[in-house]
Image (tube, rainbow, N blue to C red; front, side, top):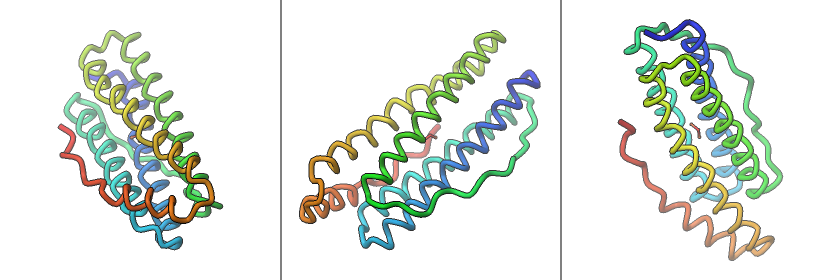
Length: 168
Ligand code: FEO
């Protein structure tokens, strides 16, 4: 049975994952407007992945005897000055998520909630991948700088991203 404090913290994380989803959806809108379909595809898949993260925590809270409550969230940023700025903002966001996940893990450890710790382990690993994939794109964008042809190549590369199998 989840403690009220951990239940509350997980509810906040559900809302934060939903917020993450809408940050990426807003970035997708920016890339659509910039005629960069590969980056739009990447952001749309990221949007879906964040929704699946929220759903995963939702299911755990319910199964662990907690009570889900969804909170309000601020509007995401819809304007970016360049693809690099959007991806840098995505990395900053993922670093914040990593901090939140680590905080949740510390709470679960302090409460000796073993089920929650095992559950959260998946997110700890996932954050390594999240940060790494965005960092790689940032490196590529920095390398191409203002070269339009290079940007098109990065965009083409990101068009290959396909939906990951559903998280278990
Ligand atoms: Fe669910 Fe990208 O953190």
